[in-house]
Length: 454
Image 1 (tube, rainbow, N blue to C red):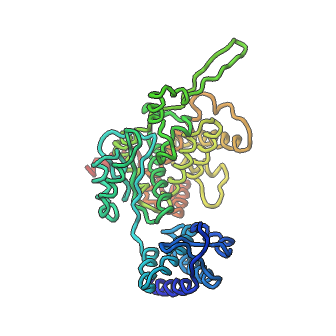
Image 2: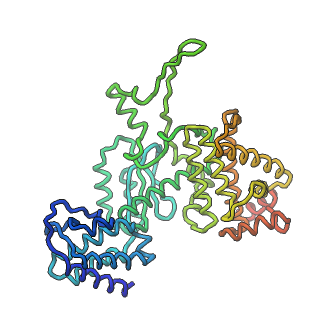
Image 3: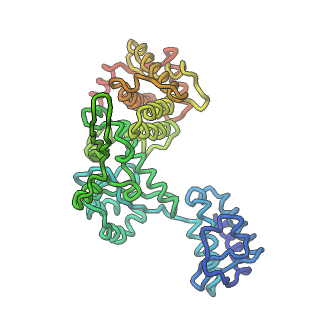
């Protein structure tokens, strides 16, 4: 990258040569990503010495600079190319205002080209947490926002270690209501892209946990809770419990429920709909060692095979947090497709066969195939605008979601049993299972292996 650094420095200095003070009192730094703006006569950049404008030739050098850096995979992974326009334009304006332009250009470009992972910390909503914070995955921490949280963030290393006081100060100034649960992540990207990556890390953690946790009904984890109760970045996603407490004090808590008047054949009725639910007990769920280990595997081993579980978890979450049953059924069907599918579209028969082959007991595979056939038929009818009565009957929708959880665990078993780490290896496994050249270990064999390890 040294050669790129040198060429970029030359382009910055060439652009600075065409810079001058601007009379536009309202520079728009972000607007430089728009071609029409940066080529307009009023285009201006903010700087310590006041607004700066660039000549036509200087704008051309800026465009060359952006194109040069955008070709570098290292830069693309770390910066939003749209945001990069603003950073490069302000860099040029800043260099224009200093005396030692060559050294300053090299120094500022180095911050863009050679970067350390960013530390992102934010409070989260609709997650219950009781006890110590947890470090999960390689570079994520979740827990109550207190001194113990700061200590664990420091153990992440990098900017987590070197900016302990800033993290502590940030937490101390938060004005969100208690209890405050937070999330921290070290991510490769910078600025806006870093925020997006950290938010995605949180969602993947929550989504994988909710998809893989078994006995959801026993744990009182009910689907169709509605998106209002979904965990997310606090302030963007409202924390229902905190809002409820605040409104109750003011007497305005009725704002959180709906009480429609229904006049029908039987008479009149006033039904109260309350969409608030208990927060997800994430720490309690992650106390299950098997579940936590599975989530860790998905978070830390970035092979193409395990990425299908990430995709499936995202669709499972859309199903789980849906408020309409047909939406939940459709998302559940897509989640199952993500687990079983292939880059080349597979017919329903092939998907049904794959689902059945995940079953360890050959005698139970016919029933598994029937199970998938019902799910696939339901998903197809909903996707094409039809109505399926069974979606609203009994526990069919919950059974669909449980099927996704079962298939996820079976794929994780394939990962550990057959060392599957790529799509090609998964294809080969299904072929071998179909022809009987490979088979799942029997339950007894698995128990014997476990005893041998102990």
